[in-house]
Structure formats: C-alpha cells, structure tokens
Amino acid sequence: MQSLPPALIRFLSGGLLSSSLLISAQKSQAQAGISGPAPGVICDQAGPTCYGRQGPSIGLTQTYFGLIAANRLTAELRERPTSNDFRLSNGTVCELGRSACWSDGWQRAQLDAKLTQQLFGALPTSASGSGSGLQGLQVPKAGVVCDPGGQLCYDQAGLSLGLTREYFGAFAEQAALRNLGGQAPPRQFALSNGSACDLTARTCWSDGWGRQQPNAALSSQLFGPPPGGESSSTSGSNSGGNNVTTKTAQCSLTRWFKPLYRGSCELREIRGGRGSRLEVSLQDGVGYTISKPRGGSYQISDSKGSIWPLQVRDQGRMITFIWSDRVLSVTPEKAPSSGSSLGQLIDGLLGQ
Image 1: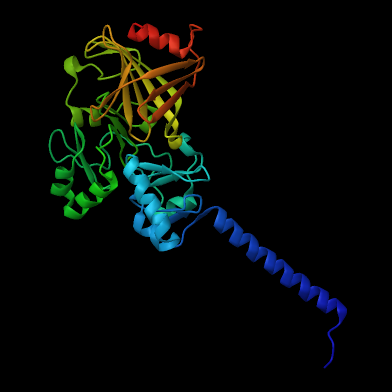
Image 2 (image 1 turned 30 degrees about the vertical axis):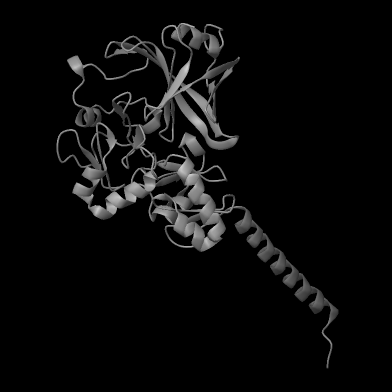
C-alpha cells in the first residue's frame, strides 16, 4: 500500500485535531451554559433547570436532565413563591409578562434577542418594553384588566384565577394556578405591554419597575380614581394620609443559608395612617412589612399576614433582618444624606 506524503499526513492530522477541539469546546460550552433544545425551551446546566414560557418547568427539567433534577426543582418550587421572571446562571433575566429576556439582568436595558426568540418565539413589539396607557390590554369592566400576552386577568387584589377562567378559559386558569405553586399571588406584577403594578402602592407605571412614569389610565382602571384626583402614591408625597418616601436598594434573601433572592428591591418609609412602618418589596413580587408596636419589639409580616418577631442588625451601609429561618440583607443604592446609618434611620422611623 502506498504511503501518504508527510505533508498530507500533517494536514489531515491538524484538521482532525482542530475538529476534535471544536467539538470538545462546543460540548463544554453547552454543558456549562444555556441551551435551547427545542422551541419554547431554555435549559440551564447550572440548576440544572429547564424553563418554558410559563417559567421553571418540572416536566421539561425531567425530560432533559432526568428525574433527580425534576425532584429537586419540585422541592424548590414548594419553598419559594412563583415569580413573573427568572434569572439564568449567565446573568440573563427573562420576564414572562413582557415575553423578553435581558442580557444585563435586572437593569432590563439590553434585550437578549437570541434567548427571547428561543423562549417566546418572537421579539417584543417594543425593544424597550415600555408600554403606554392601556395599549395591548383588555378592560372588560371596571376594576378588571386582562393581559392577552400572559393570558391572565387582574383586579385590585392582584391576579384573579376566577377572572382568568372567565375571559381566557380553564386552561389559562390551570396554567396560572400551576405557576403560583401553592403560593399567594404576588403583590406586584408586570404586564406584557411593559407596565407594572404595585398593589400596596395602588399604582401602575408605564416604564415597569423604573417607576418614573405613572400610568394613570391603568391605575384608574384597576384601582379606581384616587381620592380628590391626587396621585395614589408618589415618592415623598402624601398618600391616603401617609407620607411615603421611596428608595431603591439591593436585597438578598436566604433560608437556612440557601439563596432565595438576590437583586433589586424597593424600600418605602411610611409615616402616619396606621402608624410608621417600613415596606421592603423584592422584584419577584415578595414583600415584607417591618413595624414596631408601641411598647413592643420589632416584628415583620408578609403578604399573607403571618407575623414573626424580628432581629435587626445595623451594619452601617447594610442592615440585616433575621426572623424564623430567613435572613434579609438590604443595602440602599444611595447612602443616606444625613450621614446616619440605615439602622439609625429605621430606629428613628419606628420610634426605637
């Protein structure tokens, strides 16, 4: 048999080696990152977890990662509230309400077109995600807003399974119920036209969680006209007899040292009315109220009305709240102008 020339052997060997390295690199990248095994599906090896257009999916996770991964996800979903968005291990955040994924995470300024199309099948109508008034929404009657993009209906108490069934059918109701995972509907929610609403503030905003552009039409449709025609809630304004000051912050929430949330949050210092209190709202819809009854100690309550005694640790720029099996750490994005620590300001607010 005639031997091949040495130059040809080196060429073929180099090509085979390059192909082998390329395949190895591609496999390594798929194993360490995000993949899209089918339209409408994103899988994250870091979980491992797979997501569909309704969020984390136990069925898809079992299909692509096996039963052990599916059982782990089942246990996790029982312990955490369902959110309208989720964060992937590469930092990308996907919002179900807007049908969009953002490569810059909670900043939501850089649309990840590839992942958005992979998961939702198309890009949102507006790259900025910003909506206007009631555009893109259905308002079948006063006090009701229905979102065709999410197949969900809301009233002044938040997500309504009954209204969702009435206007979108039983399948949509069951999908919404599965997404709740046994938890109460969140106090904050985003809509597919880019607007966001906060039940505690009784206000909606056209620019989502930026909260710089109040959506008067949507707020009025959902919560009714504000008394005296005044804005229902504005940072530093009087709302229903309350003086409300709003600050942005970074929050992390853990349960038995297991991370439940890390990202942006909002602090609302409320004085008057029912007494002074501090409200902490996470962007996944979870909210807590911190108060101090007269003659008592600090306590914290959630949206379900459960109340626990609270330990408060002032760490200068950051303050930590400890109760039950959870730890919430809060760091304001801007230091207090007075020079006082956040803990000192809370002491002053709640009369410690």
